[in-house]
Image (cartoon, rainbow, N blue to C red):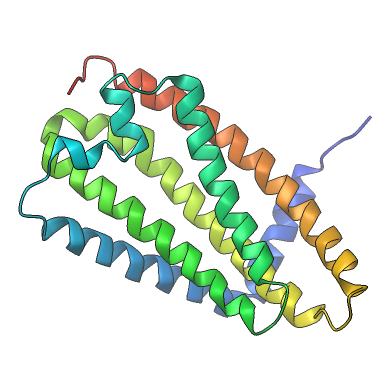
Length: 204
């Protein structure tokens, strides 16, 4: 029977964070910059329209245009796409520096949407955003930063010098990618449940 030692996993994660403080700091700075720019961009909108908000997953739930399965899949696949992109650029030490760009894009889009929703929906969306969206968004920030640090370490410690090295690289990445996929799936289900529960009574 397969057992997961959660205590050992937590300790390993803490040790990894301690050993890669600079990488995590880079991730935090990237998230802060992306988030601030997202907020600033939202505040510079002359008018927040319903048509523009229809590009976002949560708003489609509020309008009744997206169901439970659709919201979950979009959320899950988006996060997996970020991890996959970081995995691909981490194949070489030089290209791995593109990984923070994907974290930046996610932070920018997330804070842009959150700010626009507060501007458009005001108090009506407060519980939905504070309990159903923002907590899971912060979890996604942490996991993406963790994975970015892992990609940096892998590119540094196990650089691909020959074609044969690709197999080892993708084997190492594959296990972490699968782990991220499972974690994201669990949190995407929880987020979807909270979003649908907290969106009851809100309609646009």
